[in-house]
Image 1 (tube, one colour):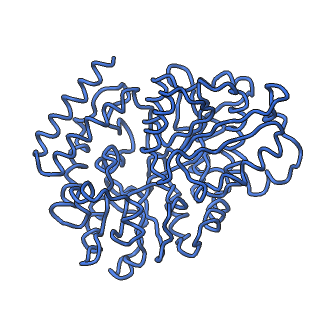
Image 2 (cartoon, rainbow, N blue to C red):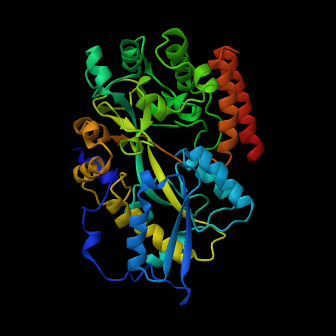
Image 3 (cartoon, rainbow, N blue to C red):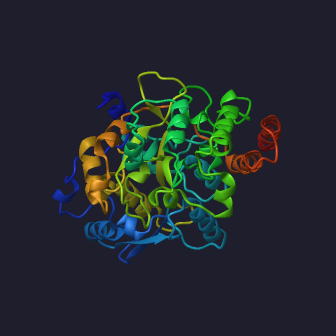
Length: 437
């Protein structure tokens, strides 16, 4: 196992069982608002079947008398983008919120800009912790303030149907490039299934090569908040997706994805596609599906082979709602859930920087509906990565995503050529940046 990666804290956790040793009431999470019970409303997108929230919350409530936590998955389809729509409706209606879960910095910063979240620096200072030492933190400060505590650690990887690999005589890749991915997609495509599936998340799935850039600006915006559309990898990423779907016909066509409202879980678990660029949350987040085949993982393809596997590293975070009447209690629960709690949950790779990686992977696998479906050797190898450079996006990133998606879809559907697409993207995204500065 790469020890440098261990220091970075990827998927870090405390050894299993530590939290269960104490039966004493917590001194930090108890009700500080008086004798009356405090109920914390915790909104997220992970349903009970996949999150196993109830036993976790029961334990916290037993150790923190006077605190009740209401788990509120706002969607049943496990789609975080649908969740954000419901979250925004709740916030606009002034409904009570205490703890809010986020899946990525992009959606996170737009809610900070909207005034939804409470700055957490005073709570860190009171507790005496350095958030960047306590966690592998992809939710950096904005204008001097932190608004989230990292929870689930997520790295980018390729999910593969090992049965399809075996049928095609292909090995599980341990280090590869996007040219190799394209070749694998061709060889895996049969009359019964496509070799690849790319979802509608254009900032990721239509920016594949940009996500392989180790240093420098590797987002749709530069770190300074300007357009990054002149980066050659933007064009190369779009051309790669277009070639897979329209020239090689080895990846599900974007027109079919739209018209049939396809979902990445449905495409992979029903064996309609052999490979899906996705993230490590898919180790356990299977939705309503149970695989009838062995699942394997490969590292995120590189621009060129380096001997080291790199990945964009991010994950989920928990925040305190600015409107909460129980901010200290909400913060206390967040700190517990992102440390002892997520370890006990045994579903995700935590961001907490005290890890036994092998034990965590084994625990996650054992907790799935079908542990034998997981190819553990490839999981362990694929999680052994070096993080690429990351930075917080500008608050107007959601506007950028909307403009980017519209132009990308015109290109993928054949309504405009690549030169027109890049030119439109540069103009529109820079205009967004200029109008927000």
